[in-house]
Image (cartoon, rainbow, N blue to C red; front, side, top):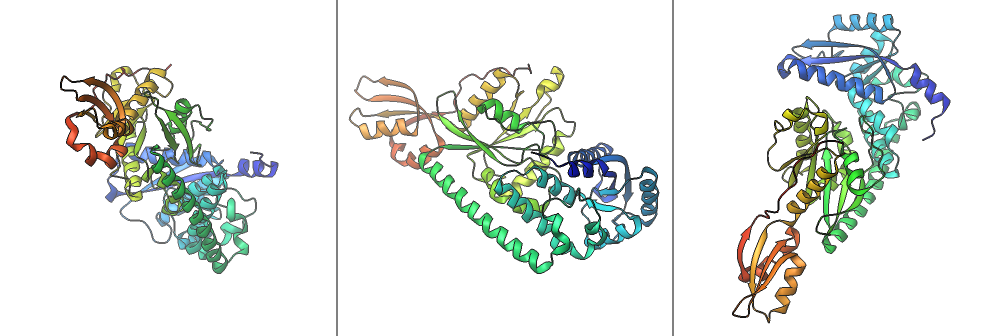
Length: 444
């Protein structure tokens, strides 16, 4: 993407002090507080802001006027002036009144965590759908805060918090914004309709849908690239890719499935953003299997996993079949790999290791294909025999002495569920597939 010299100069000029409020009632550990602040630093740097300093205050309750205490506001003013900073970024969401009060007290641009994340999405969205979704989220965030956006909107130079529709905020009013929100929702409804049609076509053809979900920077895009030879942008940064990408993946048994990469999650993911991206995130909800990709090298992996489960629950996908994939084990000492634990099925892999990728493909196949059933059918039941080949992979076929035929079939779950009642009279045995799995490999 071509960036104008003006925008480059704007980004170079933005210098910030980051502020985080810690409520004592939350009982956060020092590690969690530090991680949250480090994540805010990475978000600010991703948005193109130079971080000069940080400030943390622990309080029993948030101040209704400034979020932080009055004394801390005065301390923050000295810190901003001393560093020559022109932006204060808060780790919590601010009300319109708090923004107005902080602007008057500090005389700098005030940005909260939600606005910062929305700004990053505005930078990164490339497709028409993504741009529409980000604009809807930004306007939904802006509407109730118009009264608190005085100096913040009139400051010259643009930068964080003013990208996308922010550039015309001064010329808009509530009625105009409400009309635009209605228009965007209407356009996104059309996106939902198209996605629903595509999903229905996939269901009719029996194509499995597998979704990659996980915390931002867990390695989902790298995994998609390695498994499907896709050309998705993948970098060691937050929200490297936003627009969902679907690619065909061939499993070891030759079956084709659709693998979809989705936007990464993050703690305190703005509600307006989740609502705006619901059409995209519903790809997770409609998937036959969710691959929950976890950055095993992160010291906060358990917290990140909790955040992902919370977002999935908000989307209504919590009960979906899931395979937890601990990625980046090549960045861990070997004696720490076995410590990785999670509920349900899990794998420990490196997306850079070919043996691990083969193991993952086999695990996906086993999860989707379901159980192994043994059937005995009369030789003259050609209709039922043909149905066996439709609902799964026939592993063995033998003729018995009485002329009947015995089949061992690894069934496709969604296909078998449709026709199980027709085959039930012929089933003699069921078991999980017990084909050996490869040993976890190490990164190359």
